[in-house]
Amino acid sequence: MDLKKYKVDSFNLDHTKVTAPYVRMAARKQGEKGDVVTKFDIRICQPNKEFMPTGALHTMEHIIAEYLRDEIPGVIDFSPMGCRTGFYLTVWGDVNEEYIAAHLKPVFQKVIDWNGDIPAANEIQCGNYRDMDLNGAKEFSKKWVEGICKKGWSAFPDER
Image 1 (spheres, rainbow, N blue to C red):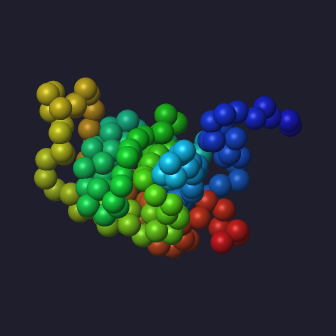
Image 2 (image 1 turned 135 degrees about the vertical axis):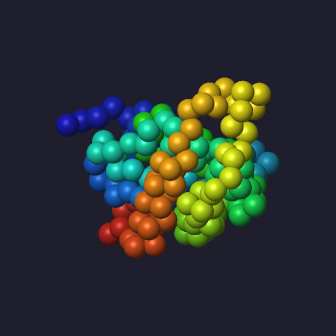
C-alpha cells in the first residue's frame, strides 16, 4: 500500500514495525544560531494493540513532568501522545536515545515508588484534576522500566 508522506514525523513511522517499550529520536532540529532541539518518542504501549487509560496517562504526566527536570537538563516539554501509547519528550541539545533511556529510568521508578499526593492535582493547577489513576500510572511505568531493562531502549531491536 502506498501511503502519503506527511509533515508530522509520527505519521510517517510504520507503527507495525516498532516494538514497545522504547525510546526513539523523532526529530532533531538546528536553529539559525546553531541551537539544537531534539524530540523523542517515549513509547510505553505497543501501537494499535494497547493504550493507557487517561487517568494513568495523566498521573504519569504530572509526576514525570515535575521530576524529569532533576535528571535531564534542558527539558523543553514532556507531553502525552494523543493515541495514549506514550509521550513526547523535547530537550535542548544533541543527545541520543541511550542517554534519554538511562536518565528516564529513575524518573519512571519514582512513579512506581510514588506514595504521596500527585503534583498539581487540584482544581487551581490542573484542568482535569479528578482524572487521575496512581495505580495505573505505577503499572505502566513498571511496564516501561522492565521492558527497557529486558530488551534495551531501541524501537527497532534488530537495528541496534
